[in-house]
Image 1 (tube, rainbow, N blue to C red):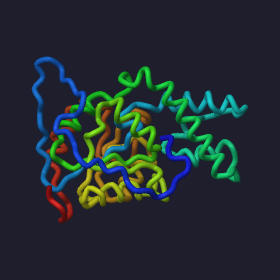
Image 2 (cartoon, rainbow, N blue to C red):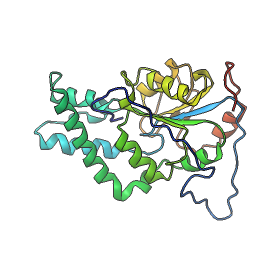
Image 3 (cartoon, helix red, strand yellow):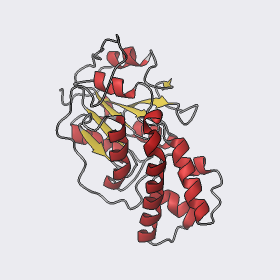
Length: 260
């Protein structure tokens, strides 16, 4: 998904305290809270775009509008954008030799446009069941690992009521190599103190699946953007899928390491 336009290693966004019940979460009347019984030592790593929020349509539209303003034909924007970081997308359209400052400004301007478009309707685009699922997975360690820019991550987590739900957040600015490199997932696993082989990754892009597998994690594919994601354990449409919870609960750590 669209990502950091001027990447450079930075201190990771680590959330020091988490609410046991997700901030702002309201369950349907009469629905009992169900805590997932994850085996100690397991952890969950979430991509953001396409996993927490179904943002692809509005990201595509924002790129179409922004590129058109600059007289550029977006072409097959979905193929050229999906799973990539903004510096890659900007150079694809504006030229590989573009000055880094210009790359950053184009990416930042497009993301400001995206947030203006998404802001009034963000609640409609949260992936169904993700907030309940995350809340029910306490006390398992959880992290966001995304190519996205920091302002977009803050924007989405606030809009989803998930600001205090993760132990760590790694964004596209904090790694040298974006997905499909496993770096973002390796860094997230390191920050929460869990071996990557004991992590479950939730992804919606080919690059993200490749990154999760290269990190040694198990990968669940969400079909919010693509119908097929080769290499995943299985596909789910959203977090209401009845197969997900029993599958998560039966997983056991594959490697020794920190047990929470």
